[in-house]
Length: 77
Image (cartoon, rainbow, N blue to C red):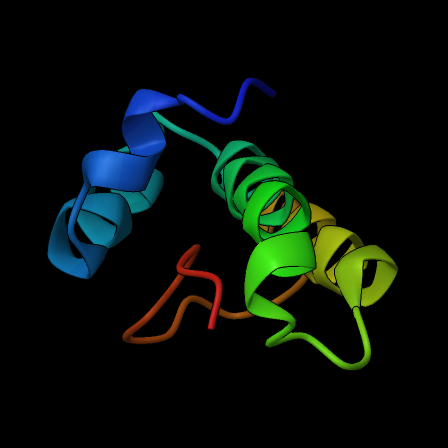
């Protein structure tokens, strides 16, 4: 996903609403967050251990309905 994804500009509330209504997937949001992390971390050096694969697996579980929907459903934290 491009790092200039419009998902980067959405609030957590907007993301939760969109994932609950199915207009965006947790996987799409997670991929946008990972792309942004990979883009800026070489400059910031803020991420010591990337859990990108775990985040992708969690997002897939949310999208498939295996994981229960919580208050921050689909929001990468």
